[in-house]
Image (cartoon, rainbow, N blue to C red; front, side, top):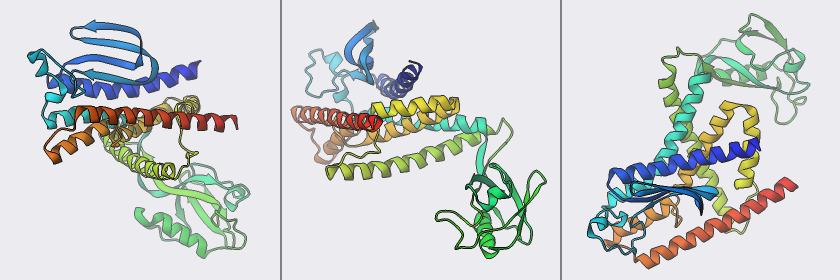
Length: 358
């Protein structure tokens, strides 16, 4: 039950942040908000405050902001109300309102990554090597090396700068296969290892059987960390964005070939992942929410009818043709988009269940 509650809270936060973006910007430009809903109807509860109904709905996988005149074919008799309709706004206003949710999700991702790095430290290139993996029965394991050991020197090797440290170390080890190599650690210990010959080295491992990195978490003063954290959080969000875009491209390619990608998770799969993440602790949950938020922002920019990107696509057509797409045609495309999304969700959910049962 706790996992289900955590999953629903995570989902609700992402949706709430997204819809608040639309809500705030629409209100700022004077567009009338008829309903702000968390989840999709049928409605569980609703209360009208001012001119807006705030509702909680049965289907938890979504949310919405219903703006007056969101459908350009909507008939509005009151002229004063007509001025506040979404479809009567300038193109730039409609674009800003539609992209507000995407921007809010992206900023949430940046903010959460920034909070994580403010807490644990700022990842930076350092002038030592950190052990992040040790292969079983490897020279490193036999010599007693431990995870998180920091190598600060090698006897007989001129210690290079940060940029070439990993390459120089790997090259030195390869040049001294079968010989004793003395490593100096940050705790004052020295470890003697003997790199394996090329013939003795298992595929996928190095001569020492150790994974290393020259990036570590640096403990800056607490007053500096939030500012550095924001910068690192932005870079992390952009990196995840690139990764998600690449993955989406591969996914759509496989879908066009008639395949349902096995590594794509729907609600059931995300719930299973969230269970494991919750067990790992609060920081893991923050990272998971940040990644999902970046993912949601990118998905909503796709030019698929019914999504924000689909509505932006019709505004782009309007800019090029100098005329609005017929309301009936746009509405038909949005309905097709909803059907497509539901169909994909069903396929992915079936795939999730099959994978879990298997």
